[in-house]
Image (cartoon, rainbow, N blue to C red; front, side, top):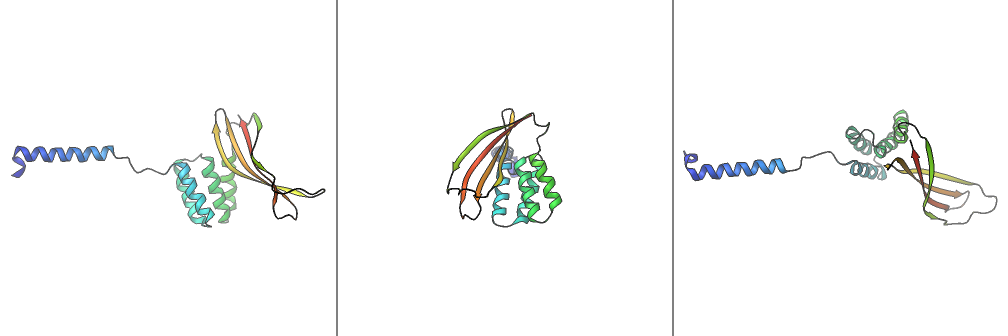
Length: 168
């Protein structure tokens, strides 16, 4: 038997041991991080592919069921697919602050711009879009994109990020 010789057994044993160590030391294929999944889902939404986005968000939510960004993205995808009941439930979960809110603080504005003037007696409207929701120190911080528009004008009159902190 060729394996009976000392040199061959030693070489085979060493090769098996090295292969085993490589397999143990290799990182296991895991689910994408919530931020990676969210990026993939929002990219699909940007390309108008709500089916793919919904699948990406649902898979990520199976691993991270309370992630507010994933819940928000899944809610948007459900809305685009006409599943309004699911959309409402997911969006409510995304905005839910467990344990209630003791205090909400207007933390301020970021990146404020005034691209066009507002005429006297104009009607203005605002669109608020949740950009992010994350836990910070002892609060939950929401960042909204704010676009203020003057009726009949082509450009917005104010564009900003509004930061609100919710304390339980």
